[in-house]
Amino acid sequence: MQGSKEQFLLYRLRVYKDPRAFAQIFHKHKPPVYRYLSTKLPSRQDAEDALSTTFLRLWNYTTTAQVDHVGSLAITIARGVVADFYRSRKKETSLDESNKEVADTTNTEEELMVRSDISLVKKILPKLKSEYQEIVILRYLEGLSTKEVAHYLEKSESAIRVGLHRALKELRALFSKEQHERERDHTIPPEPRE
Image 1: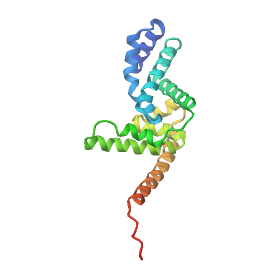
Image 2: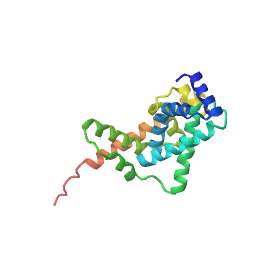
Image 3: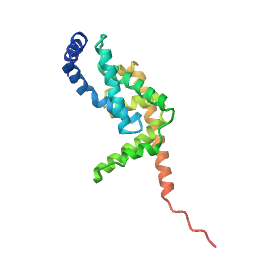
């Protein structure tokens, strides 16, 4: 969907409250917003509920105000929805809740590998500073360019590059620490001598 087509759809939304225009916008922006929400929330159901809330708020906003960039607005709204979720629950996401979603239905070898990678990412990503989390999610999980990430987060490209460098350095350290802990947990201690 090109920028001019999206602007036309936004015009249709604002002036005519056209549900078909919103459906096209929804289908384009749903995958990145859902991936963002699923990395921030403990379960698939929570992410789906948050997705509905996000797009309901997006509908309300786009039908009443001029919008220049739907993607960044959707991510901004999603951030607010995540904040509301944790404010209302007043508790941290536990690793156990995250892993319940990973150990779901199917069990082909490839799916299990993908799910274990997601589990590891869900375990390590929250340990990053929140500003780094967003940059990593948008750049590597969403596949946005540095320029697009800068636009979404309303920062300069150089600030995003520096943030990415620092985030990756911190991620490497966290992954190494996690791997070291896993190896330590799997080694069998020597038997005591009598």
